[in-house]
Image (tube, rainbow, N blue to C red; front, side, top):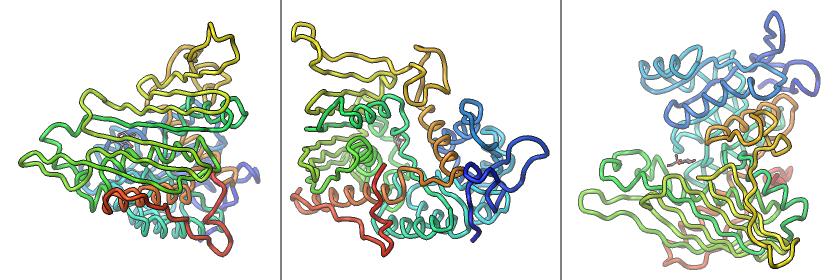
Length: 412
Ligand code: SOE
C-alpha cells in the first residue's frame, strides 16, 4: 500500500494513483471509480460532475469508471452519467491504477467486502449509508479504515443530510451556545413508496441485502443526525416497536415502520419514528430539538428553511422564526446562487464530495468516519434486539477500543 500524503498539505500530489498524474497544464487529478448506478449512483455521479464547478478544489476530478453487474447497463450508465468507462466487476475497479477514490453505491450487503478490499488496495473510500447491515461487517470495515488511515488513506460514510446547509447551521447554533443544552430530540423520517403491491420484489425487502427495513434505511439517518447535532453525546439505551405489511401475497420480512425511544448518555430523551408506508409523506425527514436557550425545527420537504424559537424578544412577539438558509455566509452557500435561489436534494451530495475531496487532499480525517457509521449501526442493532425481546429496554453496545484508541474517535 502506498502512502498518500495529501495534495493540500505538501503542495504536491499524493504519492500514488491518479493524483500523481498531473495533466499537462493545471491542477493534479484524482481518479474516481463509482460502484453502482441506481438512484444513489446517479445522485453521486451528479455530485462528482458538479462539485468542481461550484467549489474551489485543489485538484480536478476525473470520473474514470462506473461499475455495475450488467455490462450493457453499466455502459449505458457511463454515457448517461458522464463516466469515461464502464466495468462489470468491482474487483477490477479497485485494482485500477487510475483510481484514487472508490465511491460505493452498491446495496448495503456489499459495502463491507468492497470497502475492506478497496482500502487494502490503497484507495480512499466514500461509502453510502448505512455503513453495513450488521455490526460484524461494520466492525471489519472500521478496522480496515483504521489500518488504512495509518497509511494516509481516508474513508467516510455518506450520511448526506449532515451536508444540508440548514442542518449544518443547526449544528453551528448548538455549538455556539444559541440553543443551549439539548433537552429533547424528536425526529421522524416518513416515506410512502412501499405502499404499493408492486414494490415487494425490491432488494430492500430482503434482509440479507437491504438489512433492517425502514429502521435500518431511514432510522440510520436520524441516529446519525442526533450524533451530528449533539456531538459528544451518545444514545446509550433504546426500546423499539416495529411493524411490517402483512397483506395477503406480500408479507414482508423486514419492518416497514418502526418507533424507537432512546436515552442519551447526557440524559436527553430521543424519539424517532420511521416509515415507508406513510401515505402522503414522500420524503419527510422532520426534526425538533429543544434546548435550554432555544428550539429548532427542520423539515426536509422545506429544506432551505430552519425554524428557531428563542425568547430574546418580549412574550408578545415571540414565536418560531422561519429563517431562509440561502445567504452567502450560511454553510456551503458560497458555492451557489444569490440569496433566495434555492437548493435541492442533490446539493447535499455535492457538498459531501467537496468535503471528502478536501479531506483527501489535505490529509485530514473526514466525518462521518467509519467509526461514526459503526456507532449508528450499534444503535440500530440494539433497537432490533429490543424488538426481538418484546421491546425491552436495551443497552447500546460501546464500540471496541483499538490499541491505538482510534475506534473511539471524537465525533465531528
Ligand atoms: C429510501 O427510500 C431512500 O432512498 C434512502 O435509502 C435514502 O437514504 C434516503 O435519503 C432517501 O430514501
